[in-house]
Image 1 (cartoon, rainbow over the protein chains, first blue to last red):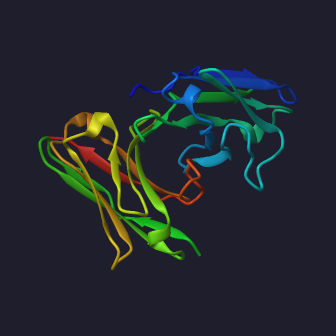
Image 2: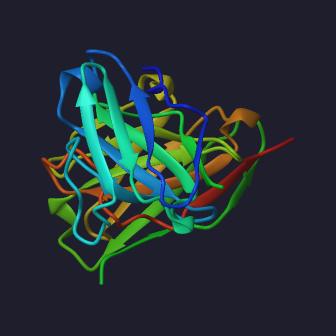
Length: 110
Length: 119
């Protein structure tokens, strides 16, 4: 199972919107509505930001939103803030009953 | 409160095995899945395997044959044992919880266990 493909880095200025893509196959991202997104600050455990493609856990800012089209899922951060600077990983359930993470994207707030 | 507490750092020689524990507390242990992941220095997350609440064990293809995940309900602990270690297995190993049917990890993770493989 290959890792899902994410851009290595994305940057934006405070207040702007950015979008992180996560590309897989019909055996993972495209086959299920089970894509989730995690935010990881240095030295910290990942934090769930989006689950089931579009759902936000309680307590997560509504500036974070998720979507999916075919084999590609996306995470959009609107109104970018300095505290959003972190690494972001997508994840998907797969047809073999396993899970797979994305390659990770470093978000920089300029 | 819900806690996942992992065992301490390990240093192993190439070819050896390592066993990392993840002790759960503060919730009904047998009603949740436990996942294992790892993160090599400066690298991304890699999913390794899962022990489900109904005792199914599923491994990532990359680890088939040298990964064993077990559970001891009497001590509410899940173990991850990786064998035939190489320097590429140097990483922080993490456990995390999943509500059955959620298909995502929730916000309860172990603190991580650094495994260093060096001759």
